[in-house]
Length: 327
Image (cartoon, rainbow, N blue to C red; front, side):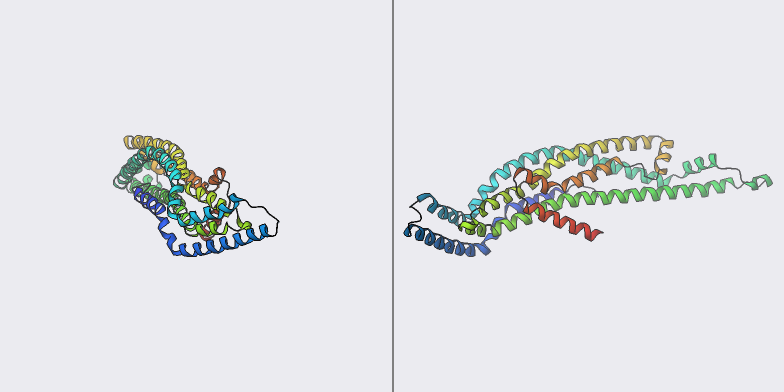
């Protein structure tokens, strides 16, 4: 896996997020019809209250249904207005991310190149394994009879150690690959859920404004606005979390790059490195795993800025269902 983050996928998701307003036309006429019926019932109820003498003539409450209906009529423009501050904040956070990702990607490729050199050297050179094992092995009883089988035994032992080291190295590379896939999954799934949740809010949003005309649902449009802003901040929070996490990832990369360079220059360190059960890697994997888990906290963090719970609960439910399927 040559890239830690595929920028093409990011650009595609950002384009989809900004173009979801075009999907509202399927329910546009239905929302306008509900708004018209709601206005008729609202004005009839207000007129009845004034005729009965229970309420005096008030201008401002009568303008509220017109304002909500105007939002429905100009829904695409309203979505653009809502997206403007979200886009400004998102671009600022994205600039922080872009300052980190270039360095992280460079370190990722440099580390992969060093690991490939280690794997190549491991497959080509078995003399070190034979030498180390030959120095520590005990004398065979056949040597007492004048039969020297130590070269053959050392060769066999050297191959055995080489195969064991290659197996450990391959398992650690597999674990690293799985952690990188998990990291990419956690990153991409946040942006994908942002598109899905925002699309649902944009498509069905006119119904929230239409129902807000009724006194019993008068705060529905405020709830919709809060949830839309909360979802819109997913990408902003994701860029901030990745920018912070990449500091730890860079630390892990630098540590392992130093180790790999020292290993390639010293034969004894090379043998000790590839003979470890862990394959000599750990800082990088742990840092990526922590970054992946941090991405799953984004729906909860977004509710700290705009107090809403519906979207975060939906994300949590989906995450739990996915975890249950993995188990």
